[in-house]
Length: 512
Image (cartoon, rainbow, N blue to C red; front, side, top):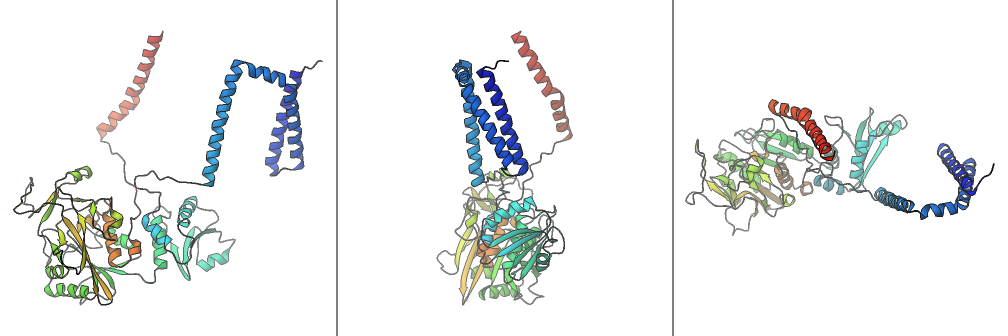
C-alpha cells in the first residue's frame, strides 16, 4: 500500500485534532492539566504540525483557487466579528454597566435611597438567613452596596452558623435582618414575598434615626383623614409617611388643649368648616414658638385662618384657578386642574424642576407684600401664562372665559413657603391652595406625592430626605370590548393568513 504526502497529511491532521479534543475532555473532567492531558495535547500538536508540513503544497494550491480565497475572506471576517464580540464581552464583564430603559426607571435606585444610603456614617449590615441565595435580593443589594462602603450584605446558612442567627435574632429560614450597632430590625417581605427598595430604605431609616418624628393631622373641621381609603382620603399619605419612618396621628386642637408637644409637624388638610378664633390663636402661637405647619385650603371654603396668613405675609385668594393651556387634556384632566411645571427656588421643589404636578380644583396662594423681609418667603408653584382666576363656578356652567374685571391673568402662585427665626428655633409654614393634590386619587400623579412628602421633610428639618421617590410600574394593559376582541380574532385566524397565501400565489404567478 502506497501513501502519498496528501494522504499522510490528512491522516496526521485527523489524529492530531482527535488527540487535542481528547486532551481537552480529560482536562475538563479532571479539573486541571494532569500528565495524561499534557501527553494527549502535546502528541496531538505534533501530529497537527507534521500534517501542516507534509500537506503544505496542497494547502498553497487550495488557497490559490478563487473560490478558496473568497471562502477564506469570509472565514477571516467571521473570525474578526467573533473576536470583536469576545473583546466586548470581556470588557463588559470587567466593567459592567446597566441601562434602565423603563419609563419610570423601575430598576434604578431612587434619589431618596441614594441620599439615605450615601449619608450613612456607621456600618449597616443586612443578613439573609437561608441555605440558598436569593438572586433578586443579591442584585438589589449589589446596587445598594455601590452607594456606600458602610452598607454590608451577606447570606448566612443558619444551620452551619447558628451563633450568627442567634446574634441577629433570626428564627426562621429566608428571614432578613438589618443591624445597626446594637439595634436589630427584621425586614418584612412585600405582598409578593419579595423585598423592595422602599422596604429596605425604610428599615435603614428607622434604625439609623435616634428618634421618630411625629406628623400630626388636625381633625374636627372636615379635614382629610388618614383612615379614609376613598379617592379623597389621605390613606396613601399615611402609608408614605410611615415608609419614611415618620409617626402619624390625628389631633383635635380643642380636646387636646392645643398642639401636643410631641408633634414635629402639624398638617391642616382641606378644612371645610371654620376654625374657632381660639383655635386660630393656638395655631398662631404654635408657629410663633418655632412650630412647623402645612396648611392646605381648598377653593370656596373659609377656614377663618386669616390672622395666621397675615402674620406670615400670605394672601390666599377667594378664587378658582383655570388653566386654559389645554395641556391637561393630554392627561385626561380639564381646565379646573392646573398643571404646574414652574417651581420656586426652595429645597422643597429643587428636585421637582423639569417635572409636573397637578392640582385638582385649586385657589391662589401668594406672597402678600414682597417688600417685607420677614418672614423669608418663596412662591413654590407657578401656573402657565395661559391660566387665570374666576370668582367660582356656577352650577351648570360650561363655558369659562377670562374677565379682567373679576379675575387675574397668569402665571399664578398656588403655594408659599416661609421661614422665620423665633429665638433659637426656626418656625416654618407652607400654604397651598389645594388639598386634593395629595389625596389618594391624585398623590400618585407625576410628582404630586414628591411635592407633599418633600414639604413634610422640609418642615420637619429632614432636608436629607427631600428627593424623588421610587416609582411604581404603570399599568399599560389594553382592555378590549367584546366586539374588538372578536375582530382581532378574525384578523388573526383568517385575514392575516389569507394575505400571506395570496401574496405567495401572486408572486408564483408573476414568476412562472
